[in-house]
Image 1 (tube, one colour):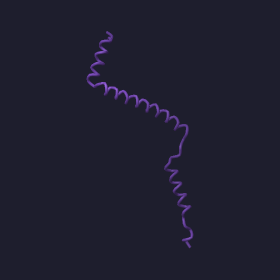
Image 2 (tube, helix red, strand yellow):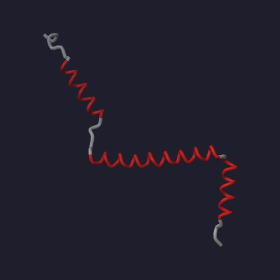
Image 3 (spheres, rainbow, N blue to C red):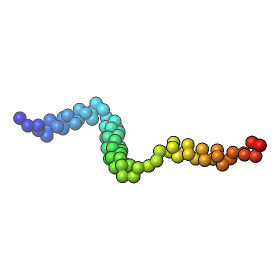
Length: 78
């Protein structure tokens, strides 16, 4: 036994009646956005492995220490 055209058409008609066209198109749009973001995430993951980047927290601490040394007032320590 194989699935005929009429059986598929009946199932599709029931789904449209239950959920409505707007809800189904919204759901398909969400699925497409999910697939797009998944592919984008895979591409970004590959570029991060080839170009290691220094974490910002370490760079910020170094700049704060360097500024503290530069602004230190040595004339008050007599």
